[in-house]
Amino acid sequence: MRLIIVSGRSGSGKSISLHVLEDLGYYCVDNLPVDMLPGLVSKLQDDHPRLAVSIDARNLPTDENVLKDVISALRQPGWHSEIIYLDADHKILLKRFSETRRRHPLTNDKVSLQEAIEGEHALLRPLASMADIMIDTSHLTQHQLCALIRDRVARENTSRLQLLIQSFGYKNGMPADADFIFDVRCLPNPYWQSDLRPLTGKDKAVADYLQGYPVVKQMVEDIIKFLDNWIPRFEADNRSYLTVGIGCTGGQHRSVFVTEQLVQQAHQLQMNVQVRHRDLK
Image 1 (spheres, helix red, strand yellow):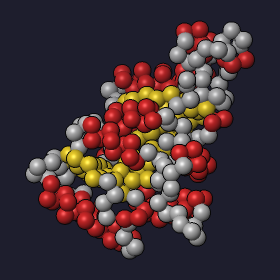
Image 2 (cartoon, rainbow, N blue to C red):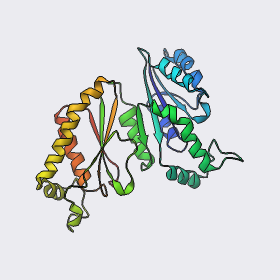
Image 3 (cartoon, rainbow, N blue to C red):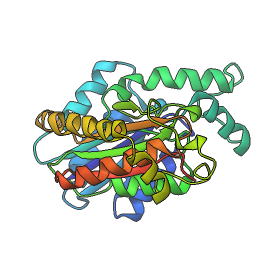
Image 4 (spheres, rainbow, N blue to C red):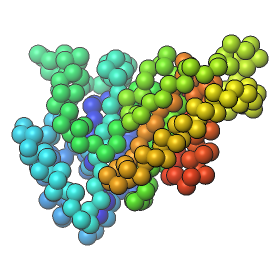
């Protein structure tokens, strides 16, 4: 039995994620009360080896210990269970509800949209703390979220840790789902070269420019050495996912180039690696 629990604040992409999992052959159940989850898994495990369940703040037990006991019961031998927690920036969630005119499930005559979003964050905090993977959807399009779920969440179970290296621009905010963040703004900036400004870190001209500085090579070597040293420790601790953010000012030149270099070296070291450029159009 493989069980994926999808949770997160309303508007963060739970329904989209559940639809992707359904297309991939998962038996999906939306908004199931937590205390019913063990019984559902026991009943369906023979006929449905892949199960995905969406849980939101309305269905959480009032006693946090009950939640912990249920999750512990699902992490038994023979059941591969994962908790995927989706979230987005507070202002982004407000904007999404305003644009779609959807009603937040926790709003009423006495609770405003802003209060509902803040209250939901507090209600879901215990479940978020138990999540195996956090996904920040603030800067993701629907297409990008679908691709991320397919590539990172729904793949077959493996004993190897899945490493995601993503570039980003600090001007667009730091990725909330990163386990480690490396700041490469100290490296020479191709942006100040007029002929390189419209290009990206994937272009040969930008790569040639950055490779001309030994400090860039040193930065890449230091980061890959850190990952090579510590990923085995995370694997030994039964971690399934690790997200590394590489940030520069705009997420176009330096962070993209360094990320591409890290991915190349990670492949050479037989790491189970994926790449994403968050702010690259």
